[in-house]
Image 1 (cartoon, rainbow, N blue to C red):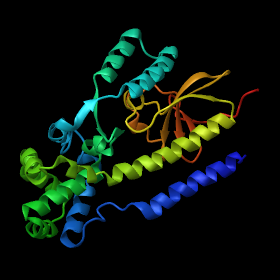
Image 2 (cartoon, one colour; image 1 turned 180 degrees about the vertical axis):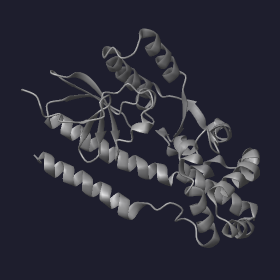
Image 3 (cartoon, rainbow, N blue to C red; image 1 turned 45 degrees about the vertical axis):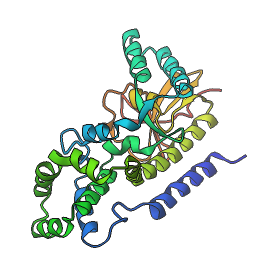
Image 4 (cartoon, rainbow, N blue to C red; image 1 turned 60 degrees about the vertical axis):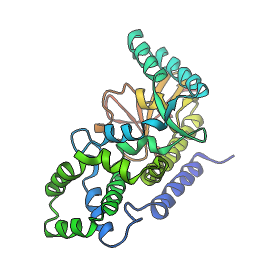
Amino acid sequence: MTSLNEDINRIKSIMGLLLEERYIPCEIFTGNSLEVCKSFNSLQSWISSYKGLDLRKDIESYLNDLYTNIPQEDLDKFMKGVEFIKQTGKYSDAEIEKNVDRIKNSKLIYIDGQWHYVNKLNTNYSDSSELLTTIIEKMGKMDEVYNWLIKDPNPERVKNFLLKSIKPNISKFLNTFFKDKLEILKFTRNTQYNTEIGEAAESNIESILEKNGFNILYRGGNGDLVDMIFGADIIAERFDKGIVLIQVKSSGPKWETLGNYKVDWIGIGNGKFYDKNTRKEIDITNYTK
């Protein structure tokens, strides 16, 4: 049986290898295309934010034919998670009922019966940047865009270009250049990378919780709607704490991303825990067996 420190070091090693070897934004391009992609990617969350370029509705509309109902096996799992959340008393019966309906009425993309990373394309700015760069290549405008860009690479100028020249025609571009919608599935490199990092962090947090007397009641995963709606990656229980809802971050805590999630703790991939309300680090080993 491995020690807690050995488990932590193993997870850190996995995360380190992923960081070093697995992914660099825009590396699928060369030359002018690479520079243009980097410029788009440097805009970060503006690319995917509803306050920025916001391609969510356009991408969802384009992918509409691929969306299907949630498999019953997954729905059954989600309902178990919701029941644990209900027991915490953090949500009213009306809120629980509303979110249960939301889960039951959701549609996601499954390829060969498996949830696919393309579900997150519309909210991932790096994957979207690679998609936008590919569209410009397919338009035959890459050299023109690059030459325009290097004259003045000011971010506000780039944003204005995307808002005026790309966004109004994005639906046409998608349907023209990606007639086979399965072609769009390749624009998920960053999502896959983030998922692997996130799963490593969750495994580390789960291991620490178990070794400190917690029973793991629920853990999310790819396409988990309990995580998406309630913000709880892990639901755990211990006699002195009761049921706790934990959101896991690979780094952070990144308080600004928590929104209105009613979680108790933030677990970080390095093994630290923070109280969501006080924003202070906590020691989960502090209890009497």
